[in-house]
Structures are given as structure tokens and as C-alpha cells.
Image (tube, rainbow, N blue to C red):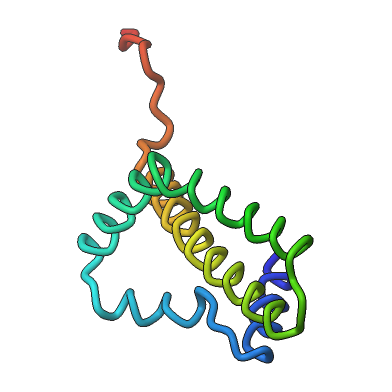
Length: 120
């Protein structure tokens, strides 16, 4: 999977587009770990409760418009850029959720048997 991600990043850079790799390192340098994870948690809640449905709807509407209304190459390029921007936001939000899932897994207690009393 990592190879595909690298290929997508390379293609976007060749087409002069930014992706998450352009901001990840910068963000981690500017925020403490606590600030980073707090922001990821806030983002995850907002994304799941509000933004996810809106982004999917906007992407779908943009794709429908591209299929029926585009009259020239300039409109096509602008529409592709719009979708790219929406996908960038969607991918960033999903990445915040993945970061939190990974952190939660790391923080889970290991090798504990819940509900079992000590046997002597």
C-alpha cells in the first residue's frame, strides 16, 4: 500500500499539486504531542458529525457537473482542481482519525483479562 501512496504523492507533485505529505512534517514540528493529538481529536469529531457528509455531497455534485456541463478544457481543469481540494480536506480529516486510532491502540492495556478475579 505504501508504494501506491508514494506513487500518488509523486503524481500529485508532478502535476504541481500539494498533498498531505507537504504538511505532515511541518505540523508535527509546530505542535507539541498533546496539542497535536487534541487537534486530531477535535478534527475527528467535527469531521464525523458534520463535514464528512458535506464533502461527499460536494464531490458527487462536482463529478455530476463535470459529466454534464463542462464546455471546455479550462472548465475541466478548474473542476478537477475543485475535486482535488475537496479530496485533500477529506484525506486530511481521515488521516487525523487514523492517527487517533493508532494512538488509542498503543495506549490500550496489554495482556489484561477483564472480568476475571484473581485466583489463589
